Length: 129
Image (tube, rainbow, N blue to C red; front, top):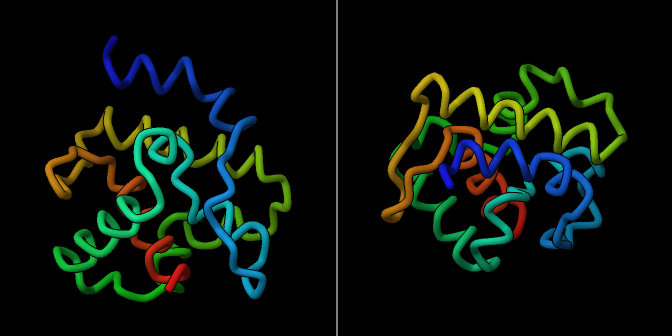
């Protein structure tokens, strides 16, 4: 099965099932939801996500700031007002699908990731440390 097809089929599941990767009590719920790469969390463990995030930040050092990443992931704050984690995950799944459709991908640690996925890993690595 193609990854793009799998993403489509798993969009609802990804929104409904999320692994508790984030333990930060200081971050708003929507920030934690934005930083959680739901699809990748089924493939990668926490340390692998953090390593992928750090590798992305080495490639794109201009994004090495959680505020910048949040702004990019939330389309300039569009999702910042949402408190519905499922809505946030669906929004991000659509962004990921669009990234693949448009060829907005990056090679990180041997994985071809959508830019949105790579940014989620980067944000996760920043707020987890």
